[in-house]
Length: 288
View 1 (cartoon, rainbow, N blue to C red):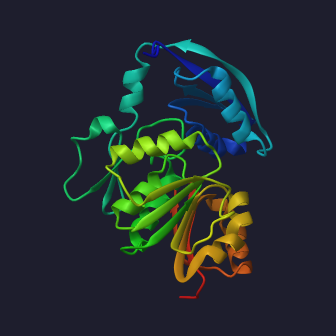
View 2: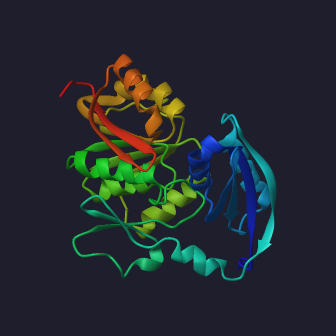
């Protein structure tokens, strides 16, 4: 049995204008909670992590994520005893209604599904995608609107598997969920079991669409600006002529350059959605 009387923490420091990036890094790295402090020139985030893994593992994960983000660095790490933290951790994930049909719940809220909502059970863990980040909510809402019954779906950068699971529960016939990080496999399988997913989901540890030999009706990716831009051309190659791409994980200030990149690669915006400082888009290969 793991010792839950303490939790690891890692402290990140960044320029003041990168606060949203620190929130993203907290989610993406599997932090179970964070404390932010902001002054005139910089922002610090103290990110807490479960003690069932060594601190070195969490440090490695965070270091890989911040690589490429100029102006973000690790400035401290350690152990903190905090007996009430487990209760606080659980209370931090109340049922969350998304769109008109979905509700995201931690497994300890299984008896609290609102009438008429489709439950998506996610164990808050080490993979990105609890549903509580605005970029994930954007992707879920757009998925709810644009997924057609019996669609074939490709989920790039699946993280916790939340979007793949939601797609199947909304009526997709099959989903291929891909991620570069082998560590997500356990999280995806665990969340699939929580949701009663026994067929239709294929998990692949792979880079984007590389080696993907099929075409799909819908591609969904909730990642960041640069990897999304780099994969736009490959998304076009795997998408059926009448299909859609749902792209999220973008800051609203990145909207204009991203729309320009989409046009350059032959994608037309169909619908846009913004929440807080985040932005997502549905696009197709045809002007509609």
